[in-house]
Image (cartoon, rainbow, N blue to C red; front, side, top):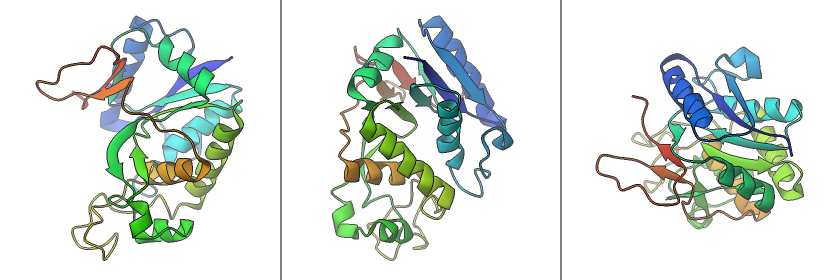
Length: 225
């Protein structure tokens, strides 16, 4: 299968992209590395206009280029050991989605939930996954359907738009709503509807001061430094 790892980053985050690329080359990645740093390259609106639309559009560009398997990595990620087990997992399972510990009930606008016909109460039973680390095998029918729907909602824009916090109840009158997570909220709801499995964090780990890196961790998620 033809596979690639994709990233979009510009401005300050370009340093993270460079770090990611170097780490992939140093840790046995045997596919292509596709990077973008201009919205025009992927055809998306700016991050300020439609948050993280660029991510879905970057994956679509890679799909149009003929890649069967795409792993999207945020600029905050970098590899620390052999990358290929992640690719083999996506090929075998059809997708990779790792839980992040929150729910759509906590991080989703009323507008987004209404688009899916989901109540706030129901949304608390929908787990979010870390969409900045998404693996898709386009030869898998469920993964293909998921991405087609994700791309559709990205292009429609309104489910991706919303503030990071709900301090002024701009996302929801419900105080249990803490904000919106844009592409991640939408992707997590879609994966739930379609029935795609989300696994406990396995290959990617958030790293903070004093964090002990787990044996199975292949990608670290750390701020741009």
